[in-house]
Amino acid sequence: MDMGSSKTMAEVDIYPRNDTGNVGQNFPIDFTIKTSTDNVNWTTAMTCTAYAQPGNAVQSFSFSAVTARYVKVEGTNLRPNPTDANRYRMAFAEIEVY
Image (cartoon, rainbow, N blue to C red; front, side, top):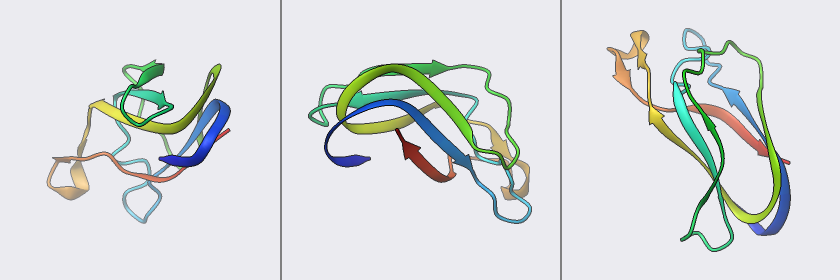
């Protein structure tokens, strides 16, 4: 995500998928949150492993404050979606950066 200019950030809130029959589906098991000032060189702000499948509530991830323009959530281990022929995908309803 391009924030438009460099910002100080210390939290990423991820809203899980919330469409009927798929609440919380496609939320990754393992993932990293990375930041960058130039969209080329990335720094890992946080790593999550064995993350339980959430329900419909926002999932908040806090980390040491950094100044960056770009943020990405990189799924490193995806879970199958039983309502989608067990396909492996990563999907969120919304991501907010603070």
